[in-house]
Amino acid sequence: MMPTAINYQDKIPNNVDLSGDRRLQRALEGWQPRFMNWWAEMGPALQTQDVYLRTAVSVGRDGWAHFGHVAPEEYRWGIFLAERDPDRRIAFGEHQGEPVWQQVPGEYRADLQRLIVVQGDTEPASVEQQRLLGLTAPSLYDLRNLFQVNVEEGRHLWAMVYLLHAYFGREGREEAEALLHRNSGSPDSPRILGAFNEETADWLAFYMFTYFTDRDGKYQLGTLKESAFDPLSRTCEFMLKEEAHHMFVGTTGVDRVVRRSAELIREHDTLDIGPHGGIPLEIIQKYLNFHYSVSLDLFGSETSTNAANYYTAGLKGRWQETRRKDDHRLTEDSVLLDKPTAEGTWQQEELPALLALNLDLRQEYIADCASGVKRWNKILAEHGIDFRFALPHPGFNRRVGVGAGFHVTPDGTIVDERTWEAGRSHWLPTSEDLTFVRSLMHPVYERGKIASWVAPPRNGINGKPFDYQYVHLA
Ligand SMILES: [Fe+2]
Ligand SMILES: [Fe+2]
Image 1 (cartoon, rainbow, N blue to C red):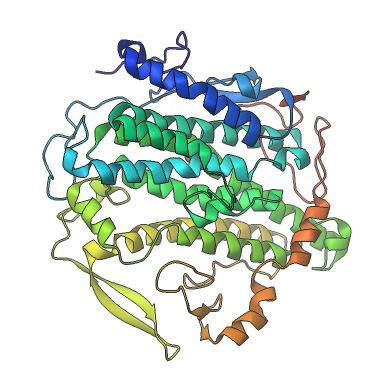
Image 2 (image 1 turned 90 degrees about the vertical axis):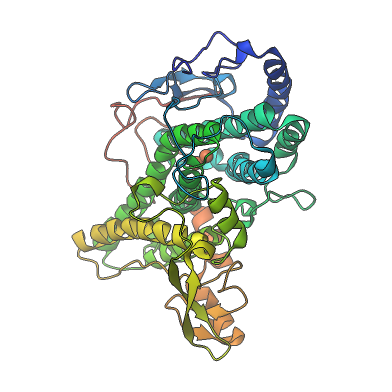
């Protein structure tokens, strides 16, 4: 059994008995200063004395988080895996029922390495995307949450780098270097996935990103948590605990923007609340359309032989694989996929379920996304406002999958390019919208104060009040 207590004596805090493997320890200690350089260069631009942060102290069910003021550059990034279940067996695919793997089988080495690199690449990317947000935080509470998300994405990078170093030899170490070399939006060496090369330019975008894009992360990690490669599974299980807070920041962040906009609409009896320092609901809807559609691209093509092969091999399962009531092999099953046609209609195609695993995951994700929209609409209803938010059709604004190359409106109508371009400014944020939202972004760093465009949170962090000194600025 792995020890669950985290060793903070080591240079790299860990619960994987790192000091018992000198070679690995030295290799990771060699990577550590490069990570710190990356954090200094590409991490938060705002300098702080300290931030009220949560740090993992054990991975057990209770009490894994410790709160205290720490300087972000002194945050103890480390390697934490969930506890090992000695009886764990492979839940799906052709190896179903066999004991899980503690080492990488040679035949799956390249595929597993690729899965880890793609996941790992997203973690530092989001820190890079959010780099400038600290300069315009609407409150100290929000500033603290930004730092919390950023240090944990940094830790998720550590988690993936540990796997690469520990299980993939020289190639793994090279990939670990490349994870610091690629940068979000870089013309020469961009991040692997499109959504992670878009800048997160303002705080509404940050809330949308943590709602929609971190939620994609939750679903991807959920499939890797099912992996037959046990160290990957245990790594993802612990990452998911931290990820929950990122989505909380997104859900409640959008809540608070909607609430503030609703208050201003009532107060001034107009939807045109821009002049009163609020974000109009239609701009919020356009941000939603953008972040949702680029996040759907992260699920890949609806049909994928790679996904089928990963499943059959046991590398990557389905969301909540063990709770599903089927044979966990899917060789006999089929599903229906809506496909756009050149005639401008949607046509259902029957597909082998194995080929449509990306679609299966995306559908779980879409159902989850809908719960936020329901919350936000409830706030509008409570304020007696008729406007309602909606998720656009999955074919809208897509660059990946069956919708790519088609022009689909938010309500799912297939139109020609000219019609779509004419509608674009009603569906996606225009440069005027972005400029307007950016004009509202001023830092509010006074204790207990908050910007005009967002409501304060209902509760503070870890039982502290909203007006707590969450951050000491440098
Ligand atoms: Fe993450
Ligand atoms: Fe995250």
